[in-house]
Amino acid sequence: MTRPYNFSAGPAAIPAEVLEQAAAEMLDWHGSGMGVMEMSHRGKEFLSIYEQAEADLRELLAVPANYKILFMQGGGLAENAIVPLNLSRAGAVDFVVTGSWSQKSQKEARKYASEVNIVASAEDTGFTTLPDPASWTVSRGASYLHICSNETINGIEFHQLPNLKALGSDAPLVIDFSSHVASRPVDWSRVGLAFGGAQKNLGPAGLTLVVVREDLLGHALPACPSAFDYKTVADNQSMYNTPPTWGIYIAGLTFQWLKRQTEGSLTGVAAMEQRNIAKAALLYNAIDSSQLYVNRVAANCRSRMNIPFFLRDESRNDAFLAGAKERGLLQLKGHKSVGGMRASVYNAMPIEGVQALVDYMREFEQKHA
Ligand SMILES: *Cc1c(COP(=O)(O)O)cnc(C)c1O
Image (cartoon, rainbow, N blue to C red; front, side):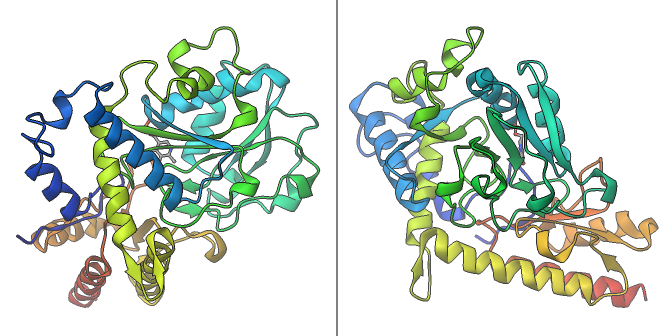
Protein backbone atom coordinates (compact mmCIF):
# COMPACT_ATOMS: atom_id res chain seq x y z
CA MET A 1 0.00 0.00 0.00
CA THR A 2 1.41 3.43 -0.87
CA ARG A 3 0.28 6.24 1.39
CA PRO A 4 0.30 9.97 0.67
CA TYR A 5 3.08 12.08 2.17
CA ASN A 6 1.77 13.78 5.29
CA PHE A 7 3.41 17.09 6.23
CA SER A 8 1.27 17.73 9.32
CA ALA A 9 2.91 19.65 12.17
CA GLY A 10 1.19 17.43 14.72
CA PRO A 11 -0.35 15.04 15.36
CA ALA A 12 1.97 13.95 12.60
CA ALA A 13 2.93 11.02 10.41
CA ILE A 14 4.02 7.83 12.15
CA PRO A 15 6.27 5.32 10.32
CA ALA A 16 4.11 2.86 8.36
CA GLU A 17 6.03 -0.08 9.85
CA VAL A 18 4.99 1.06 13.32
CA LEU A 19 1.33 1.37 12.35
CA GLU A 20 1.39 -2.03 10.65
CA GLN A 21 2.89 -3.70 13.69
CA ALA A 22 0.35 -2.05 15.98
CA ALA A 23 -2.46 -3.17 13.67
CA ALA A 24 -1.19 -6.76 13.68
CA GLU A 25 -1.00 -6.75 17.49
CA MET A 26 -4.24 -4.85 18.06
CA LEU A 27 -6.38 -7.79 19.20
CA ASP A 28 -3.72 -10.01 20.71
CA TRP A 29 -0.39 -8.69 21.93
CA HIS A 30 2.28 -11.44 21.83
CA GLY A 31 -0.18 -14.26 22.55
CA SER A 32 -1.49 -12.63 25.73
CA GLY A 33 -5.08 -12.73 24.44
CA MET A 34 -5.35 -8.95 25.06
CA GLY A 35 -4.72 -5.81 23.10
CA VAL A 36 -2.35 -3.29 24.73
CA MET A 37 -5.22 -0.85 25.42
CA GLU A 38 -6.97 -3.55 27.47
CA MET A 39 -4.09 -4.50 29.78
CA SER A 40 -3.51 -3.53 33.38
CA HIS A 41 -0.67 -1.07 33.54
CA ARG A 42 0.66 -3.08 36.49
CA GLY A 43 0.62 -6.47 34.77
CA LYS A 44 3.84 -8.12 33.60
CA GLU A 45 2.90 -7.68 29.93
CA PHE A 46 2.61 -3.91 30.08
CA LEU A 47 5.55 -3.60 32.45
CA SER A 48 7.73 -5.28 29.84
CA ILE A 49 6.49 -2.81 27.20
CA TYR A 50 7.18 0.12 29.52
CA GLU A 51 10.66 -1.04 30.54
CA GLN A 52 11.70 -1.71 26.96
CA ALA A 53 10.44 1.72 25.84
CA GLU A 54 12.31 3.45 28.64
CA ALA A 55 15.55 1.56 27.99
CA ASP A 56 15.33 2.14 24.22
CA LEU A 57 14.72 5.86 24.63
CA ARG A 58 17.58 6.17 27.12
CA GLU A 59 19.86 4.50 24.61
CA LEU A 60 18.60 6.48 21.58
CA LEU A 61 18.92 9.88 23.24
CA ALA A 62 21.99 8.89 25.32
CA VAL A 63 20.22 10.03 28.49
CA PRO A 64 22.72 9.95 31.39
CA ALA A 65 22.02 7.74 34.43
CA ASN A 66 21.34 10.74 36.70
CA TYR A 67 18.32 11.80 34.62
CA LYS A 68 14.84 10.31 35.05
CA ILE A 69 12.63 9.57 32.07
CA LEU A 70 8.97 10.27 32.87
CA PHE A 71 5.97 9.36 30.72
CA MET A 72 3.27 11.86 31.60
CA GLN A 73 0.03 13.34 30.22
CA GLY A 74 -1.19 16.85 29.53
CA GLY A 75 1.00 17.69 26.54
CA GLY A 76 3.46 20.53 26.13
CA LEU A 77 0.92 23.08 27.31
CA ALA A 78 0.40 21.37 30.66
CA GLU A 79 4.19 21.31 31.09
CA ASN A 80 4.14 25.09 30.79
CA ALA A 81 2.42 24.98 34.20
CA ILE A 82 3.98 21.80 35.57
CA VAL A 83 7.54 23.07 35.11
CA PRO A 84 7.08 26.23 37.23
CA LEU A 85 4.99 24.26 39.74
CA ASN A 86 8.00 21.98 40.23
CA LEU A 87 10.98 24.23 39.70
CA SER A 88 10.16 27.85 40.52
CA ARG A 89 10.59 27.74 44.28
CA ALA A 90 14.09 29.20 44.24
CA GLY A 91 12.98 32.50 42.71
CA ALA A 92 12.71 34.28 39.40
CA VAL A 93 12.41 32.29 36.21
CA ASP A 94 14.05 33.37 32.95
CA PHE A 95 12.62 33.01 29.46
CA VAL A 96 14.03 33.51 26.00
CA VAL A 97 11.16 34.28 23.64
CA THR A 98 11.84 33.09 20.11
CA GLY A 99 8.33 32.38 18.81
CA SER A 100 4.77 31.38 19.59
CA TRP A 101 5.57 28.48 21.89
CA SER A 102 8.06 30.17 24.19
CA GLN A 103 5.68 33.15 24.25
CA LYS A 104 2.90 30.89 25.51
CA SER A 105 5.21 29.26 28.02
CA GLN A 106 6.27 32.51 29.67
CA LYS A 107 2.64 33.68 29.93
CA GLU A 108 1.60 30.49 31.69
CA ALA A 109 4.57 30.58 34.07
CA ARG A 110 3.36 33.96 35.39
CA LYS A 111 0.49 32.15 37.10
CA TYR A 112 2.90 30.20 39.31
CA ALA A 113 6.29 31.86 39.48
CA SER A 114 6.85 34.87 41.72
CA GLU A 115 8.83 36.62 38.99
CA VAL A 116 9.22 36.02 35.26
CA ASN A 117 11.99 37.75 33.29
CA ILE A 118 12.27 37.89 29.54
CA VAL A 119 16.04 37.80 29.16
CA ALA A 120 15.93 38.01 25.35
CA SER A 121 13.28 38.20 22.65
CA ALA A 122 13.23 37.97 18.88
CA GLU A 123 9.83 39.62 18.60
CA ASP A 124 11.37 42.74 17.03
CA THR A 125 12.43 40.69 13.97
CA GLY A 126 9.02 39.04 13.69
CA PHE A 127 10.59 35.86 15.08
CA THR A 128 12.98 35.29 12.19
CA THR A 129 16.22 35.31 14.21
CA LEU A 130 17.68 33.84 17.41
CA PRO A 131 19.06 36.34 19.91
CA ASP A 132 22.76 35.65 20.42
CA PRO A 133 23.21 34.09 23.90
CA ALA A 134 26.04 36.57 24.56
CA SER A 135 23.36 39.30 24.62
CA TRP A 136 21.04 37.57 27.10
CA THR A 137 20.62 39.37 30.41
CA VAL A 138 20.28 36.30 32.64
CA SER A 139 18.96 36.89 36.17
CA ARG A 140 21.08 36.17 39.22
CA GLY A 141 19.90 33.13 41.13
CA ALA A 142 17.10 32.24 38.72
CA SER A 143 15.42 28.90 39.38
CA TYR A 144 15.62 27.97 35.70
CA LEU A 145 15.89 29.38 32.20
CA HIS A 146 13.36 28.21 29.61
CA ILE A 147 13.80 28.04 25.84
CA CYS A 148 11.79 26.37 23.09
CA SER A 149 14.57 24.58 21.27
CA ASN A 150 12.46 24.23 18.11
CA GLU A 151 9.69 26.72 17.44
CA THR A 152 7.18 24.61 15.51
CA ILE A 153 5.11 27.53 14.20
CA ASN A 154 7.86 30.01 13.33
CA GLY A 155 10.35 27.43 12.05
CA ILE A 156 13.24 28.48 14.32
CA GLU A 157 15.65 25.97 15.80
CA PHE A 158 18.55 26.19 18.23
CA HIS A 159 21.31 24.31 16.44
CA GLN A 160 23.38 24.56 19.58
CA LEU A 161 21.96 24.71 23.08
CA PRO A 162 23.14 27.70 25.13
CA ASN A 163 25.83 27.11 27.72
CA LEU A 164 24.33 28.91 30.71
CA LYS A 165 27.42 28.45 32.88
CA ALA A 166 29.44 30.40 30.32
CA LEU A 167 26.83 33.20 30.61
CA GLY A 168 27.37 33.36 34.37
CA SER A 169 24.14 31.57 35.26
CA ASP A 170 23.84 28.50 37.48
CA ALA A 171 20.20 28.05 36.52
CA PRO A 172 19.22 24.73 34.97
CA LEU A 173 18.22 25.01 31.32
CA VAL A 174 14.67 23.85 30.54
CA ILE A 175 13.99 22.99 26.90
CA ASP A 176 10.66 22.43 25.19
CA PHE A 177 11.85 19.95 22.56
CA SER A 178 8.37 18.77 21.50
CA SER A 179 8.91 19.21 17.79
CA HIS A 180 12.50 18.07 17.31
CA VAL A 181 13.01 15.39 19.94
CA ALA A 182 14.82 12.38 18.45
CA SER A 183 15.65 14.31 15.26
CA ARG A 184 19.19 15.04 16.51
CA PRO A 185 21.30 14.22 19.58
CA VAL A 186 20.83 16.24 22.79
CA ASP A 187 23.77 17.77 24.70
CA TRP A 188 22.59 16.76 28.17
CA SER A 189 25.54 18.53 29.83
CA ARG A 190 23.65 21.77 29.09
CA VAL A 191 20.13 20.61 30.03
CA GLY A 192 18.36 20.32 33.38
CA LEU A 193 14.96 19.31 32.07
CA ALA A 194 13.50 18.58 28.64
CA PHE A 195 9.84 18.05 27.83
CA GLY A 196 7.87 17.28 24.72
CA GLY A 197 4.49 16.07 23.54
CA ALA A 198 4.79 12.78 21.66
CA GLN A 199 2.56 13.69 18.74
CA LYS A 200 5.22 15.38 16.63
CA ASN A 201 8.04 12.89 16.42
CA LEU A 202 7.44 9.98 18.81
CA GLY A 203 3.91 8.66 18.54
CA PRO A 204 0.29 9.54 19.26
CA ALA A 205 -1.10 12.54 21.16
CA GLY A 206 -1.72 11.95 24.85
CA LEU A 207 1.81 11.05 25.91
CA THR A 208 4.24 13.66 27.21
CA LEU A 209 7.90 12.90 27.63
CA VAL A 210 9.88 14.53 30.44
CA VAL A 211 13.60 13.98 31.01
CA VAL A 212 14.74 15.56 34.26
CA ARG A 213 18.00 15.69 36.21
CA GLU A 214 17.60 14.02 39.59
CA ASP A 215 18.68 17.02 41.68
CA LEU A 216 15.66 18.94 40.32
CA LEU A 217 13.19 16.49 41.87
CA GLY A 218 11.51 17.13 45.20
CA HIS A 219 11.21 20.94 45.12
CA ALA A 220 7.58 21.30 44.00
CA LEU A 221 5.38 24.13 45.25
CA PRO A 222 2.80 22.98 47.81
CA ALA A 223 0.00 23.64 45.30
CA CYS A 224 1.47 21.26 42.70
CA PRO A 225 -0.96 18.41 41.96
CA SER A 226 0.51 15.09 43.16
CA ALA A 227 0.08 13.52 39.72
CA PHE A 228 2.24 16.35 38.30
CA ASP A 229 4.93 16.34 40.98
CA TYR A 230 8.00 15.05 39.12
CA LYS A 231 9.32 13.34 42.25
CA THR A 232 6.06 11.46 42.81
CA VAL A 233 5.96 10.47 39.14
CA ALA A 234 9.61 9.37 39.20
CA ASP A 235 9.31 7.44 42.47
CA ASN A 236 6.41 5.48 40.99
CA GLN A 237 7.99 4.68 37.60
CA SER A 238 5.43 7.00 35.90
CA MET A 239 2.64 4.88 37.42
CA TYR A 240 1.44 7.01 40.31
CA ASN A 241 -1.73 7.12 38.27
CA THR A 242 -2.58 5.20 35.12
CA PRO A 243 -0.09 6.24 32.47
CA PRO A 244 -1.03 6.70 28.78
CA THR A 245 -0.42 3.03 28.02
CA TRP A 246 -1.28 3.15 24.32
CA GLY A 247 0.96 6.15 23.75
CA ILE A 248 3.87 4.48 25.55
CA TYR A 249 3.39 1.34 23.46
CA ILE A 250 3.35 3.19 20.11
CA ALA A 251 6.28 5.37 21.16
CA GLY A 252 8.09 2.15 22.13
CA LEU A 253 7.51 0.71 18.64
CA THR A 254 8.79 4.00 17.20
CA PHE A 255 11.94 3.75 19.35
CA GLN A 256 12.55 0.25 17.96
CA TRP A 257 12.03 1.58 14.44
CA LEU A 258 14.52 4.37 15.17
CA LYS A 259 17.08 1.86 16.43
CA ARG A 260 16.82 -0.05 13.14
CA GLN A 261 17.54 3.04 10.99
CA THR A 262 21.04 3.33 9.57
CA GLU A 263 22.83 5.86 7.40
CA GLY A 264 26.34 4.68 6.47
CA SER A 265 27.98 3.72 9.75
CA LEU A 266 25.47 5.76 11.79
CA THR A 267 22.40 4.32 13.51
CA GLY A 268 19.40 5.60 15.44
CA VAL A 269 19.19 9.32 16.16
CA ALA A 270 22.58 10.04 14.56
CA ALA A 271 21.33 8.43 11.34
CA MET A 272 18.09 10.41 11.55
CA GLU A 273 20.06 13.62 11.97
CA GLN A 274 21.94 13.01 8.70
CA ARG A 275 18.66 12.36 6.88
CA ASN A 276 17.03 15.40 8.45
CA ILE A 277 19.93 17.63 7.37
CA ALA A 278 19.58 16.34 3.80
CA LYS A 279 15.78 16.74 3.77
CA ALA A 280 15.92 20.30 5.10
CA ALA A 281 18.68 21.31 2.64
CA LEU A 282 16.65 19.97 -0.28
CA LEU A 283 13.59 21.99 0.65
CA TYR A 284 15.34 25.23 1.69
CA ASN A 285 17.40 25.17 -1.51
CA ALA A 286 14.24 24.82 -3.57
CA ILE A 287 12.64 27.75 -1.73
CA ASP A 288 15.72 30.00 -1.94
CA SER A 289 16.32 29.32 -5.64
CA SER A 290 12.75 30.13 -6.65
CA GLN A 291 11.04 33.40 -7.61
CA LEU A 292 7.71 32.35 -6.11
CA TYR A 293 8.50 30.93 -2.67
CA VAL A 294 10.14 32.63 0.29
CA ASN A 295 11.25 31.72 3.82
CA ARG A 296 12.32 34.68 5.96
CA VAL A 297 14.12 32.90 8.80
CA ALA A 298 17.83 33.67 9.25
CA ALA A 299 20.02 30.92 7.84
CA ASN A 300 21.69 30.06 11.17
CA CYS A 301 18.43 29.15 12.93
CA ARG A 302 16.23 27.59 10.28
CA SER A 303 14.42 24.57 11.61
CA ARG A 304 15.15 21.18 10.11
CA MET A 305 11.74 19.95 11.19
CA ASN A 306 9.21 22.71 10.47
CA ILE A 307 9.74 24.69 7.30
CA PRO A 308 7.30 27.56 6.76
CA PHE A 309 7.23 29.22 3.36
CA PHE A 310 5.09 31.78 1.59
CA LEU A 311 3.98 32.27 -1.99
CA ARG A 312 4.96 35.77 -3.07
CA ASP A 313 1.56 35.86 -4.69
CA GLU A 314 -0.72 34.83 -1.85
CA SER A 315 -3.78 34.74 -4.08
CA ARG A 316 -2.44 31.39 -5.31
CA ASN A 317 -2.42 29.73 -1.85
CA ASP A 318 -5.62 27.76 -2.32
CA ALA A 319 -4.59 26.56 -5.79
CA PHE A 320 -1.23 25.47 -4.41
CA LEU A 321 -2.82 23.46 -1.60
CA ALA A 322 -5.42 21.87 -3.87
CA GLY A 323 -2.76 20.77 -6.38
CA ALA A 324 -0.63 19.40 -3.58
CA LYS A 325 -3.49 17.33 -2.24
CA GLU A 326 -4.15 15.91 -5.71
CA ARG A 327 -0.56 14.68 -5.74
CA GLY A 328 -0.78 13.07 -2.32
CA LEU A 329 1.02 15.88 -0.45
CA LEU A 330 -1.13 16.49 2.61
CA GLN A 331 -1.51 19.09 5.37
CA LEU A 332 0.77 21.80 3.98
CA LYS A 333 -1.31 24.75 5.12
CA GLY A 334 0.61 27.08 7.43
CA HIS A 335 -0.39 27.77 11.03
CA LYS A 336 -3.28 30.24 11.19
CA SER A 337 -1.20 32.79 13.12
CA VAL A 338 1.46 32.89 10.39
CA GLY A 339 -0.36 31.96 7.18
CA GLY A 340 1.28 30.64 4.03
CA MET A 341 2.53 27.08 3.97
CA ARG A 342 4.42 24.86 6.35
CA ALA A 343 6.08 21.54 5.61
CA SER A 344 6.83 19.54 8.74
CA VAL A 345 9.41 16.92 7.89
CA TYR A 346 9.80 14.86 11.04
CA ASN A 347 11.65 11.54 11.23
CA ALA A 348 8.79 9.63 9.61
CA MET A 349 9.04 11.74 6.43
CA PRO A 350 11.39 10.07 3.92
CA ILE A 351 13.51 12.16 1.57
CA GLU A 352 11.33 10.87 -1.29
CA GLY A 353 8.43 12.81 0.24
CA VAL A 354 10.46 16.02 0.31
CA GLN A 355 11.58 15.40 -3.28
CA ALA A 356 7.94 14.93 -4.32
CA LEU A 357 7.09 18.25 -2.67
CA VAL A 358 10.02 20.04 -4.32
CA ASP A 359 9.05 18.61 -7.74
CA TYR A 360 5.50 19.82 -7.26
CA MET A 361 6.66 23.28 -6.16
CA ARG A 362 8.79 23.66 -9.32
CA GLU A 363 5.94 22.48 -11.52
CA PHE A 364 3.52 24.89 -9.85
CA GLU A 365 5.93 27.79 -10.22
CA GLN A 366 6.51 27.09 -13.93
CA LYS A 367 2.81 26.80 -14.60
CA HIS A 368 2.14 30.16 -12.96
CA ALA A 369 5.23 32.04 -14.16
C1 LIG B 1 2.91 21.04 19.76
C2 LIG B 1 3.75 21.79 20.71
C3 LIG B 1 3.33 22.04 22.02
C4 LIG B 1 1.92 21.76 22.50
O1 LIG B 1 1.68 20.52 22.86
P1 LIG B 1 0.23 20.07 23.33
O2 LIG B 1 0.41 18.60 23.36
O3 LIG B 1 -0.78 20.54 22.34
O4 LIG B 1 -0.01 20.65 24.67
C5 LIG B 1 4.20 22.70 22.88
N1 LIG B 1 5.41 23.11 22.46
C6 LIG B 1 5.83 22.89 21.19
C7 LIG B 1 7.18 23.37 20.79
C8 LIG B 1 5.02 22.23 20.29
O5 LIG B 1 5.44 22.02 19.04
